[in-house]
Structure formats: C-alpha cells, structure tokens
Length: 367
Ligand SMILES: Cc1cc2nc3c(=O)[nH]c(=O)nc-3n(C[C@H](O)[C@H](O)[C@H](O)COP(=O)(O)O)c2cc1C
Image 1 (spheres, rainbow, N blue to C red):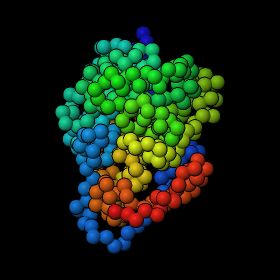
Image 2: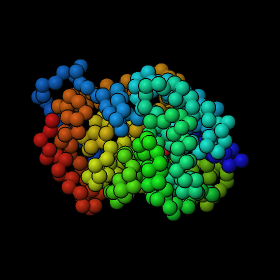
Image 3: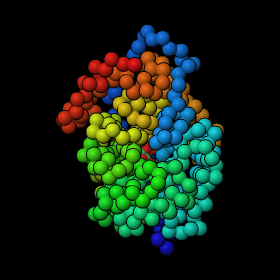
Image 4: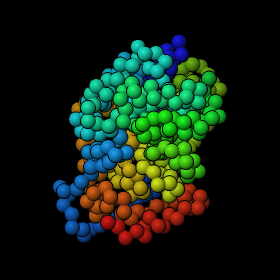
C-alpha cells in the first residue's frame, strides 16, 4: 500500500514536470551573475580540448551527471531505459530516482534495475531519502546499492518538499546519525544530495564530518519541488497545500551561491545541480570548483522525446563546454577550475554578506 502511494507520487512528479512550468520563478540559479574572463590569446586548439572527468574515482567522458529522477512505474522504466542507454553509449554517469517504492515492493525493482542492465561501464548512482534512513537504518541503503549494483549512493535531503507536501514525512530528527551509520556500513561512497534548495557551508562541514564523500548542492533556481507540490495540491483541491507551496516556490540557496559556499568550506567532490541548462553554465560551475554538474528536468523532457533527443542535448552541452573552455584559455578540466571568474549581482551580495572572499575568484592568475 505504502509502495503504491510512493510510486503514484513519483508518477505525479514526472507527469507534472513534463507538462507544467515547475522551474523557479523569482530566484535565479545565479549563472547570469558569473562571467568567465575572455582570453583572446591562448595557445589552444578547440579540437584538442579534453573534457574527460573523474567522479569519485570513476572515469566519465564529460563532467555531467544525469540527475536522480525516476523509477517505480512503467513509464519510469521507459524513461530510465532511454537515459541509461545513452549514458552507457556516451560514458556519462547516471543516477536513478528515489528507490523507496522498489525497496517497499520488490515487484517494482525492474524499473530501477533496467539502468544497471543497460550500463556495464557507465557509473550508476542509487538514491534513497535521508528521512527513510532514520526509521529503517543502514540496511535500507545497502538494499538500494545491491539492487542496481550501484557505484555510489546518493542520500537525498528534501525537507522543503516533505514540508510543503500534504502529509509529507518531516521527522528529520536523527538524520545526521543515520547518515554517519550508513557511511560506515557501505563499501561504496555516499553522496549527500539536496533536491532544489541548496546546501549551506554549515551543512557542508557537518556532512563532511559524517563521512560523505561528495555533495550534490542541487540549489534553488532550477526545478522547484514546492512548484511541483503546488500542482499536486491543486489537483487534490487542497487550497492550503497550494498556498503553502506557492509561498515556498522560490525557497532555497541559489545554486551558484551554494556551490561557492560548499567549495569554500570543505574539500569534497561537488556536483553542481539546480538550474544547470547547458555547457556555459557547466564551465562557470567548474571554475567555481565543481567536480561536475548534474542535470534533471531538461533531460527528462528529452527522454520523453527519445534517445536521439537525449544524445543531441548532451552533444550540444559538450560542444558549448568545450567552446567556453577554449575562450577561457583552459585545455582540460583542471585548468578550467583555475580560471578567473567575476561574480557580480545577487550572488556577489549573498557571498559577501555571508563572509566569503568573492574577489579571490576574479584575481586568480588562470591556467
Ligand atoms: C521528475 C523529477 C523527479 C525527481 N526525483 C528525485 C528523486 O527521486 N531523488 C532525488 O534526489 N532528486 C530528485 N529530483 C531532483 C533532481 O535530481 C535535481 O536535484 C533537481 O531537479 C534540480 O535539477 P534541475 O534544475 O536540472 O531539474 C527529481 C527531479 C525531477 C525533475
């Protein structure tokens, strides 16, 4: 019964994300406040730029992760298969959506397992909710990893979504201890992942102390889960649910501010996601210290259109990233991470008021 409700909710998310505008309205991810410094003269051939990447020790052809989205229903299985086939072919890491439904109902396992079946080389990342860990313990995470022979496990932190949702699970007391126990019990790395509200420097330090190896900031400015819940509440005729979701639609730390906060505070690998919409955004995220970027909504929409649309999106992403690197004077990702960037506007204001040295980015000497 609980699994039915979980998979029903996951189906709602996909349907709403495909048909409605669920992106942030008033808050921007912040990429418009970041400028890479153009280099008119650098000894680089565009054709020789290397965008190969390493995430948690695994090689990838590009600094891109297909972010956690779905599983648990027939439609989800089709989407997962499409994304996984392209992930394998293009050597791009792929995450599955929350595996709660399949952990609760083994009949749904195939909707997630399809990803591992398609991927013998591409990195596969499992996904569970932190709040479920509290009540079920580390074996819950181990079950998710085992189900898809995952290379890493993402534990999602989704207080905003659970908080605005009618009947959401908001018993987060004990979450930190549960994550620490999970890290100890697993032999694959744990990624702490937000779902659209960002990670602060305070939480990044705490997560590092718990033993997580990577943080996916999933900041505000891309898909808004309060936005998704707004449409679910409207369909259920819950005016209170609608009002709350609307008021929290743009809640969160903008993605770029979150990335800078996390990278300035801890020396962990960082996935930058939440409103990343192309290769230029990715180049900016790399310059601010990201290991790679994660993309959800645009790839969900392309997956609906079929594998060729997903391939085309990734090819365009790669070309734009290479061109951004060519123009910034970086021939590989390590050099891109040393390029100067100028941070202005709302992101600058945010970082200055939080005590970060924003000008250290613009005064770098470059690659
Ligand atoms: C349809 C859909 C379902 C999602 N489900 C999950 C999930 O189960 N677990 C999770 O960690 N994040 C989930 N997310 C959040 C994404 O992984 C990502 O963090 C967020 O959407 C921001 O990226 P974007 O702006 O590129 O969409 C989901 C996103 C979408 C669009």
